Amino acid sequence: MKVSERTKVIKPAVTLAIAAKAQKLREQGVDLVNFSAGEPDFDTPEHIKEAAIQALRKGMTKYTDVRGIEPLREAIVEKYQHDYGLSYTKEEVLVSCGGKHALYNVFQAILDQGDEVIIPSPYWVSYQDMVLLCDAVPRILPTKEENGFRITPAELQAALTPRTRAFILNSPSNPTGAAYDREDLAALSRVLEPHECLIFSDDIYEKIVYDEFSFYSIVTINPKLRERTIIFNSVSKTYAMTGWRIGYAIGLAPVISAAAKIQSQSTSNPTSIAQAAALEALRGPQDKVAEMVREFQKRRDAIVKNLNAMEGIRCFNPQGAFYVFPNIRPLLGKKAKGKKIESACDLAEFLLEEAQVAAVPGEDFGSAENIRFTYATSLKEVEKGCERIEAAIKKLE
Ligand code: PMP
Ligand code: GLU
Image 1 (spheres, rainbow, N blue to C red):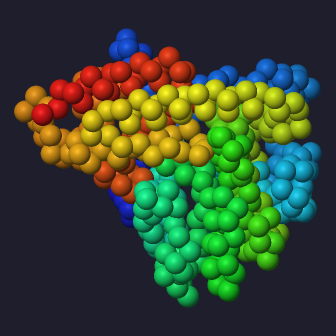
Image 2: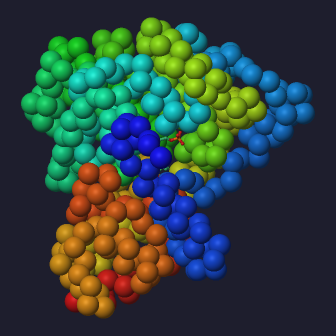
C-alpha cells in the first residue's frame, strides 16, 4: 500500500512509543521502573474531575466553538493578565487538543515550503517533525552543557538568517530541564528584536520550577516582541491532565484565526467536557500545583544526586520540568554480555533488558551522548530505578 511521501520524512514520537512498550511489559508482569514518557504520576485533582462530571451531567456533550468555549478562553486571558501582566483578548486564544496540537496547528498556519525554524538542541522530539510536515526546514542550534544547555545571544545571532521564520524557545526545557532566567531572556530578546522572525514560546513547564527560579515570559521582558510571539501552554503537566488533551496557543489574531481554520477542518473543537475540566483547573484552587511541584523537587534532588554518584554518568541539575538528561559518554564503547554499547539507544535497550528501567535515548532529542529519565514518578520508584541503573552499569566492562 502506498503511503504519502510526507509520512516517510517523520518518525513516530519515540517518547510515546517507549511508554507504550513499558506499559505492555508491565501488563506482562514485568516489574518495570518507568522513566520514559513525561507525565505526572499524580491523579488529576478531584475538583477538576468533578467539573467534567458536572459538565457531562448538564449535557455539555455537543460541539463547541472550534476555538474553545468562551469562558475557557476568557480564563486563559485572565491567567496571562494575572500571572505575567500580559493583555490578550479571547480572539487571540485558540484551545486545541493538547499543547502538541496547538503547536501543530500554528506551524501549519505559519510555515511555507523552505521556511526555516531555529530549534535549540537538545529539543523536544516533536518540533522537528512538525516542521518537516510543513515542508519547512528545521535549523538545529546546539547548546552546550557548560552554558546550562541554554543558547547564548551570540549563537542565536549567528543562526538567524532572512529565511528564519520562527525561533523555538522552550523554557524550562524538555529534555534538559534547563531554563532561561530574566537576564537570559532580556539578552535573547535584544538579538531577536531587530529581526522579523516569530518566537514560539513553549511555556508548558512554566509552573514546574525549583529552588529560587522564577519563570518569566519573554513578552513581559520585552513587550515589543508581543506582536511576534506565539505562546503555547497546556493543562497537561501543571494539573496532571495529560489524558484530557487540552492545550492552547496565544498570539496575534490573524495567526490564531489561520490556525483555527486548520483546526476547524481537522479536529473541530477539543472535547467539550475536557474543556470544562480545564476551565476549573485554571479558575479553581491552585494549591495542588504547589504540592506536586514540591514532590517533583524532592525527586529531582534524589535522581540528580544518585546519578552523579555513578561512574560514567554526569547529570546536569535542572531548574524545571521533570526530566534529567545525563551525559553517558564514558559508558559508550563498553560491553555487556559481549555486546558493545555504541549509542544512547543501545544503553536504553541495555537498561530495559538488564535493569527493567525504561528510558528514552538522547538521539531523538538531538544528542547521542545523553539519555532521558523522567522523574514524574514516585520517590520510591526514583530510588529503585537508580539502584537498578547503578547495578546494571557496574556490569559494563
Ligand atoms: N511541549 C513540550 C516541551 C512537551 O514536553 C510536551 C509533551 N507533553 C508538549 C509540548 C505537549 O504536551 P500536551 O500535548 O500534552 O499538552
Ligand atoms: N511530552 C512528553 C514527553 O516528552 C509526553 C510524550 C510526548 O508528547 O512526546 O515524554
